[in-house]
Length: 235
Image 1: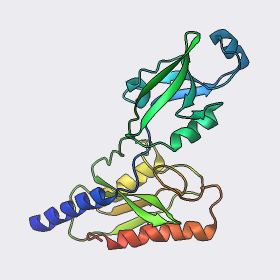
Image 2 (image 1 turned 180 degrees about the horizontal axis):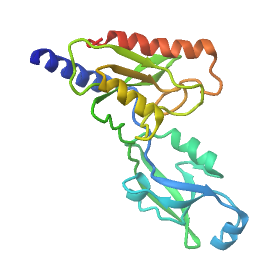
Image 3 (image 1 turned 60 degrees about the vertical axis):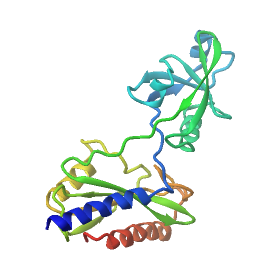
């Protein structure tokens, strides 16, 4: 049995190492808001543009880049930020480990900071283990996330978990999230549970927008994940 467990552990490691098409999205580590006309006047900005940094979250890219609360982000790379939507869309094109140049408004003047963006940490699997993998889809790649029990067996039941229709990421679920509680219960019962990241979200690369994907495309997305799950040695 120990030899089987060792083999399965090695398989997990190889699976993760081979997943090189998808890199982790960026952990920027800041809460932002729109810049109002009143704020622009108070800060000395000619126009209400960019995003206002209201909070710096510890251990994120913003802290490492020495961005401060009350700074206004004006641009990331060559892309100008006009509002929080721009901020989110621009950041989504970057991945952890990418170099970046950011222009800020601070103390009545424009300054520039440069550095390396940090990647988001992987999800805490609780009492189990987590596998981050990928499957090809529509010319791009989808992220798959599989939770397994801490005491892995040579063979175990497996579940493909399909979330609600809302367009929200299923990666890095908080401990209080209902999905996380359900998935944790299933793994505690000795099951492996896979999720497929919603198309166009999270680490996914070159996949259709979640808002525009058809039913047939979404079905194909989950079938791709199911086929990968069937291919794991522990199923």
